[in-house]
Image (cartoon, rainbow, N blue to C red; front, side):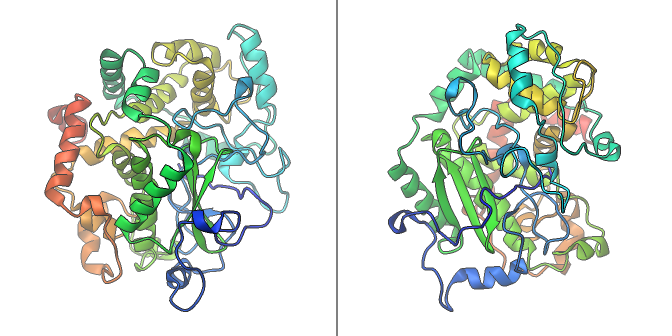
Amino acid sequence: MWDCVQNATAKAPQPGGDVPAHERVSGADGGPEDPTASLAQWYGCPLPPARSLTSPSLGVSGWMRRSESTCSVNYSLGLRASKGQMRPATSLPHIAKGVGGSTLPTATRPCLLVALRPLNLEQEKQAFFQSDYKYEPQFEYAQPEPRSVLDKYREGSGLFLEQAVGIMECVLRKFGSYENFEEVTGGSVLPKSQVWAAVRKYLQKEGCVGEVVVRLSEELLSQAVMVVESCRPTLTINLSGARQHWLEGMLRHEIGTHYLRGVNNSVQPWATAEGRKQFGLKPANPTEEGLASLHSVLLRKQPYLWRAALLYYTVYHATSMSFSQLFSHIARFVQDPDVRWEYCLRAKRGQTDTSQPGCFSKDQVYLDGILRILRHRRTIDFKMLTSLGKVSYEDVERLRHLAVLSKTRIPHFMRDQERYLQHLDHIVTINELEDSTLEHLLP
C-alpha cells in the first residue's frame, strides 16, 4: 500500500507532547547531542506534520508513506466499532476517517487512504446488517478517485491463491478458528507498564533510544502507526492489541523494518524521487511490506501468515463477487460479522455500487511480497537489502557498490544470518509451503 496517514490533530504535538515524562521512550530531548538532530537533517526537514515512514512516496526526501493496512487511525476520537467497543487491533482496522469528520481539505487532494473511505460508511453498514447481510452497499465519496487510479488496482491476482487457502487451512486444522488461534498464541493483553518496558527494551536492542517517540493509545483502530510529527518519528501503539507474545513482532515490523530501512534509505544517493529515477530503481513494494510482514511473525513459535493470506484471498474473490456474496463466501474463514465487513470493505473500496463485481487489489501486496522473499531467501543478502534502504531485493546486487554504508544500521534479529534463515525456513515449514511450488510459480 502507498497511502498516507493524516495527522490526528490540527497542530502536530511537540516530541513526547502528551506523554508523561516518566512514560516517554524517547531519551533526552534537545541539545546538540540529541540524535534526532542528525535524523532531522536526513529527513530534509521541514516535513509535513504527519508523513509516514514506509511505502514509496517519492518526493519527500526519500521517506516512504505507511502501509494503510496497519496504520489506519481513529481520527474522530469518539468513533468505535459496532456495539460501542473498539475493534481489536488484530482484526482489520477501519479505513481512516479524515481530520474533523468527513470534511476533506479543498486546497490539496486527500491521500488515497482518506479518499477511499465512504462518506456514508456507517449508514450503509447499518443497512447491510439490518438486511441480514443481503443488501449491497451503495457508497458515496467526497472526491472520487480518478478512473486511472482505480483501474490500476482493479484486477485481483490468483497466482498465490492456493498458498493463501493452504495457510488459513493450517490454522483452522490446528486451532479450530482464528479467534482461538489469537487467544492461544498471542497471549494476554499487556498492561501499560509492561508495554512501556517491552518498548524500551526493544529500542535499546536497535539502538533507537532518543530517536523514536512512543505513545500508547486506546483510540487507535489498528495495531500501530508510525508517522513523522515535527520531524520526529512517532510510534503510537494500540493498547488493546498489545498481546504478550505478539508485541515484539509489531516492533520488528514498524521499527526494525520500516523505520531502520527508512533511516538507511535517507543517506543513499537514491533517497529522492529524482535519485530513484536516476538509478532505475524498482518499486520498494512488494519487498518492503513482505519483509515487514515476515518480521512480524519471525520469532513466533507458530508463525502463521494468516492475515496476509486472508487479505489476498478476499481481494481475489471480490473481483468476481458482489459485496454480499463476498461477505457470505469468506465466512468459511472468518466468523465475526464485524471483521468480515471490514475485510469486504477493504476489498470493495472505491466502488459506488457494490452489487457489481470488482476489487481494490492493494492488499495483495503482503502475501505477494512474503512469498517472493521466501522463494529467494537463500540468495538474498538480507543485511545489504536493509542497508540499501527502500529498495527491492531484485536491485540489491547492482546497487551494492553504489551504496553509502558508513551510517547504515541492521536490526538485531538480522545480524546472525544463519539463525535468521533458520527462522525463515521455519515459516515455510509451519505454513506448509513447498519450495518446489514457489520455484515453479516464481522462476
